[in-house]
Image 1: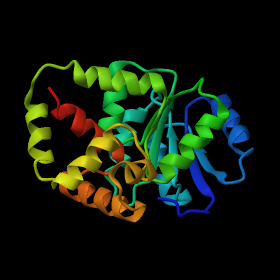
Image 2 (image 1 turned 180 degrees about the horizontal axis):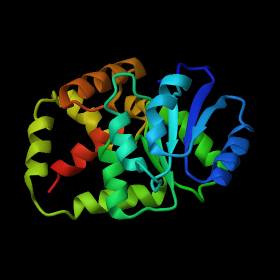
Image 3 (image 1 turned 90 degrees about the horizontal axis):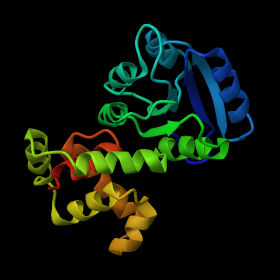
Length: 221
């Protein structure tokens, strides 16, 4: 996670050279974001992360060799894993859920305006999820409409580990609230909310706020 005030280092992963060039020029317009490197395939991600130490990876889905979803799953298992935003032209149901369950902190479509992409980079680097509104609606609709299955039971079992206060915070995280918004809602300090979120990560074995949100939605009828 990038510290407040630091320049956010970004790694681009896309097999289209024009897309890589376009994203590089676009992000260069923002003083707090630096494109540290760019690669064309998922097979190159691990080495590029070792070399460039990015805070955020902008990851395409369809690439030769290792696709972006598989690369995300592998990358997020690392202890020092950077945050991942899936940036793609594809928003099928399977792609959305697989990317988010793999630990991606954001899922944006490539037609997203530049300032929104930059804001997504900032938010995800700060540990807060960022998704296109249509993607968020898709995720909630999919989970809400899914039939009862072992995933729901598992989610409920995990959430039962939380204290009442942690449960309230997890519920608001699932609604996409920021730490400041949660603090205002629950009459807590932002520092207290951060402490709650850290404990929730530990108890639920989650790596980011999106995975907390998915568990909360999985647990619902």
